[in-house]
Image (tube, rainbow, N blue to C red; front, side, top):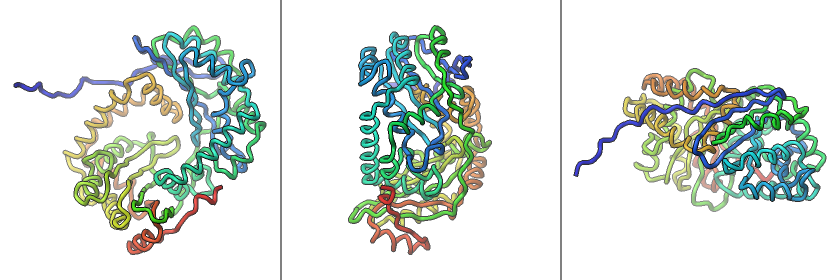
Amino acid sequence: MNRPAITHSHAWEFPVPHVTRLGNGLDVWYFPMPGQHIASFDLVLPASLADEPTTAEGVGAVALNASDEGTLSHPDGAIGELLEAHGATLHGAAHHHHTTFGGVAPSTRLGDALPLFLEVLREPEYADQDVTHHVEGLTAAFDSKVATPETANRMALRAALFGGDHREGRPASGTPSTLLTITPDDVRAWHQAHYGPAGATLLIAGAAAPDAWFPLLEAWSGQAIPAPRPTPAPTLPPSVVVVDQPGAVQATISLATRTPTRDDPRWPQLRVAGHAVAGAFASRLNLELRERLGYSYGIGGGFSPGVAEGMLLVGGSVRTEVAGDSVARLLDGLALVAALTDAEVADARNYLISVAPLANETSSDIVAQASALAAAGLAPGYLHAHFAQLARVTPGEATAAWRDVVAPDQVTIAVNGDADSLLPALARLGLAPQVVDLQSWS
């Protein structure tokens, strides 16, 4: 039987939205998706968690999570019932440099759901019991994160990378010691200061054009002042931290360094290099530690962009007895002594370009990607140029960009596991590991 020939897919571009700036300072990006039954929307607010009082960190997350519990017009959960009646759900996240708040609804019901969403934005009730409920929920979530090896590892890593004195080095959702001080008045004050149309971007993808709702959107007013574009945190010396989990048979390892982000001309080369070294199943690091040595079920990572700067992060979980050797081999791999080959770079290019249509199929996919662009201050057409640049990356360029940015002796390392086993193993590598106690934030 003859098999069909496999060929590259046709050229694909991230959709171009219709962009409108309203009189109240709100930017609206609309992505028309004819025939799409589900509409998605997301609001990007330039609310920096660096503005939170240090004694009430987490107030941004509480304000977001409690906002749809009730409104002044529809208190005590009634707004949620109305949204549910139209098939709509809301979601959001408070990031260090911005907040996203949006939802999904049937395309035919978006005209009914959007006014309710704007009501939540304009007049959240913030009843005392709702604020208390979300404070307690985030406090319990912190305890759960500390008890989860992967999450605890990342918390320790960020603290080591950015420093405990910098907001980016502390959990975005706060810690028990700060959450439990938050009052309903704190939450209302945060909303008043940061939920406004000026400097915000509303992204909508679906079958129904939003023009008819522009008067409603124009009626949204607020005194929020957009935060200035963030600057990177001060650079800290590299360090090695251990989160003790007595008796653990596995160790969770992360190696990271802060890097340039999307506005750096080397960004396409870095993405290709990151996929070849750590992102693909057949990446150098995964082939070494999983396939050849059998230390791990998988090593992954790569370069991720941020608003002010990016990050290279690689790691995975390994057996405790080989944790020291795993760290040594990861550091060796980050040195990239042997240049990337034509085949490695071709595979990385093809994957990053070919996976894009699959990663941007639905209205939610489109809005999520566009939200990241808007938060970074990038134009909607950024991705078209980026994919064209990815296609031109050569092995020499990818290798040179990696070596420019990544120095193994400048990498911060976090390991979660049995400290009695890990400390001597790491010390034998010439490292100086320190045990950190995440519960000290409680």
